[in-house]
Length: 129
Image: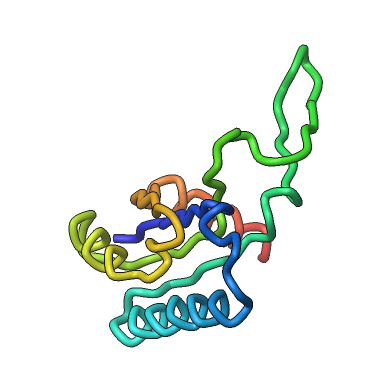
């Protein structure tokens, strides 16, 4: 099964950290991602720029309204995502509970919707032919 793991971070947890401390944490995360790769569990991932670079789209009175920043007004913001292959949700939890990124903020783990993703893949293939 494929799982999407949304990594959140609390900006205040990084305040006061030196560049060396932040680089060490990043290396620790990358090293664990390599472990996931070796086990055939790492499918992909993307790091996101700071939440201040985000915009949120909403429909308002029939018009698209663009607001600067993320939709959620919380101290934790999405920092990136990891696509994981695991047997089931419990296996995904076991794999991600060892990820050093959990020290910087929570991870939300959701199964990918394989049915809709198959429709998307078929559309992509149709567009390429």
